[in-house]
Image (cartoon, rainbow, N blue to C red; front, top):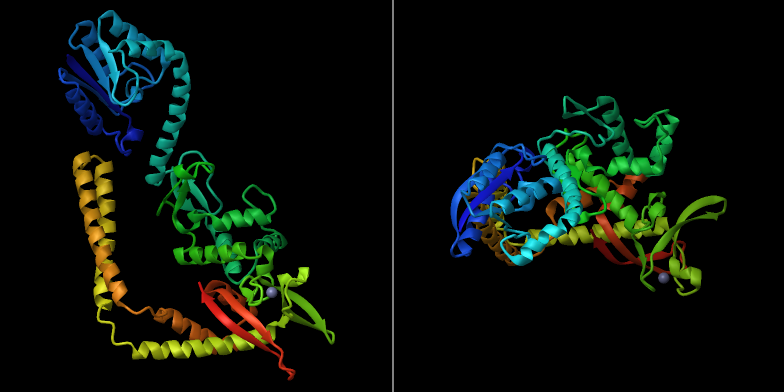
Length: 475
Ligand SMILES: [Zn+2]
């Protein structure tokens, strides 16, 4: 059988895997070869055309070809390459039928070369459904591409950004406020307090509304502030992806990540509790029952004192007495100081790390692979590189990466596990300067560095009771 191919790619689809003219050709060719007595007689190609109607050069040509019986079967990779409307499909099938030309889609069941396949024509009614879903997919493909090019048409441009001539830019007036909000957040203010502060200052949202807690949360959690775009349908996580470096940055990546890690720790533990003034809220854990110990304010001799009460106390399920923050703070710092000292000694005693350089070099190689991948992707997306070449390159990079990763793992195993030196330095800095820290700074440090502090209370009958720090878990 003489088989003709029809291939088409629209400008929006050129970046998508499997959509390039060459990819379609390859797949159709392997299909034809697999049929035994089929052979290729002609390729009809419409690059850069949409399928909104049949008014495409190659479609017109293939209709002539069918009339002149120049081929016996028309093969497409996917039906939507040929038509997008049921009516167009119907007209084409009628024409093919009249001239005894068959029709086959490589990836779908639509196949008029068999009796069963002919039944498909009666299914045309159901096709309108397919048409609709394909249309919405297409819209999202087009949007994706524009996003990748740093352009944005339609959709919502978030606070702090605007578009000029179809390109993203920073809206300086708004960006200033976004940066201020991050500053506040990093010094321990909650979303609610930030919203309140903005309202107090008469600062409005872009829509002219009062800032709310959720609006602040949404704004601060949006990765576009550090330049990345989260794209995709909220409900369908599998279709979501992040495109890096799309927006001009309002804040640096570090600030964003720090804010997100604070948010995470507040969320994981006790919601609003953690934004209170208690340094250890969300972290302090009762050694007797394993429950969290939550912050309370107690009045002693007219003075307001911060202390912590085990959640088990509420149900009389734990006999842990409440512990004042002052005691915990004191014993905790002691314990930490001791830990830092012994850790520093450990490090000095360790033989010099000969493989540190080697690890660095390997990590550099990993980064190079990352860069090269971006280049290949760019070349492929712009059709400078063919699908096969692209796959070969990516395969090579993958093998290289695996190899380096294995080497890294081997080196890692050979190395004793020590607390990162920079962390150690930061901790000892913090401990030494603890007295000079603002209480929001203390709190922030605790939330960022520690996962859990397991504590017991020892009643000494002296002036001060003692908190026994059983275990400190770093994040
Ligand atoms: Zn308890």
